[in-house]
Image (cartoon, rainbow, N blue to C red; front, side, top):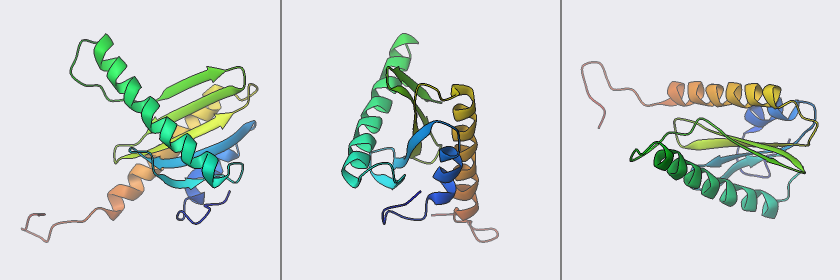
Length: 140
């Protein structure tokens, strides 16, 4: 895994890349900016993946809300299957997203478990880094 100068994200993506048949992974913001990506991707490919993934998530949120006849929906994951393999996308609660690509032989259940485990770790790290109010005070 390499972060390609986008931050220290190996701890997030490396465990996902250890799943047999996983070829690439990207950590991105909800608005499609790269936080980190695996060495299987070039910078240009990672940027394209991030932009497309962000757009797909937005479309899926809108579709889920429309099907439920509700004003909004929270995504838990998006899975795309093609003749080239699977893409699994899982958003976090704090505005980032993990996307992983596995070839047709990847065990989707194992990939899903690993991606969601890393999403949970991202959430724990975000909570640990969240600013806290002084005793008796409030956050502004």
